Image (cartoon, rainbow, N blue to C red; front, side, top):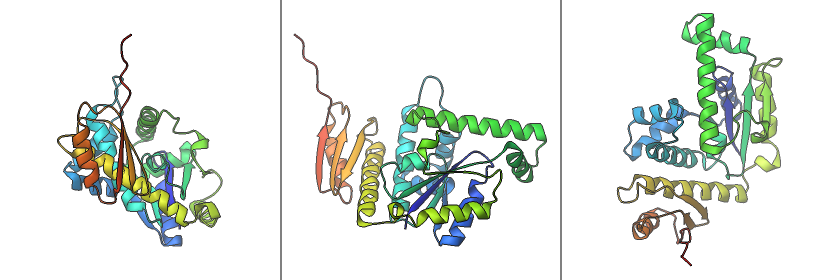
Length: 266
């Protein structure tokens, strides 16, 4: 059974849809807070992780700490959903799990009036305050997605299913998504499971490198196929330490390190 990611604007009904699907399908329902809690097992405080993803990047770019936090979050999420039957509603889920086939990527949108009504019930704010809050949160998410992945958060091509709650309710939306989970592509075949295992292993190695004191200064790309792991990036004469950390990760059976070629004069 697949993994479902739900992307939504603030107070657009994504959480309600996730909870409905959890009841209907019997899947685990996972939010960002749960993944942050799992990621803190690697020695970063929950407050640090929350702050890193609540504040949009500055014009100067993403600092190295936030690279580390992103690596930890991706590793925690991939590990948690690797066996399917899970629903994740949180920031960047459809992109953090990119490459893991068997992931049903859902986008939920709703009219501003719907969102204002939902927000007022939760936040006890005035009409203008609620609009300002929603617009700020949407802009922050847009900036994060653009900066980290160079894509438009609202681009429908990033999703398998886009649901507009203007004329249907949560129960109807829930039935639509449930029907999609029966499609063959989203079933967890051995191929799907292997892809999710590869994603989980690559994410684990990247997170281990980000947290080890001898390699935490690096920013690398990691891929896995079966137990074979490939690491790409500039290693600053730290290839031995990278090898030590990567080979210590459970499930790694072979390692390839690819550094950029050094240009020679003349």
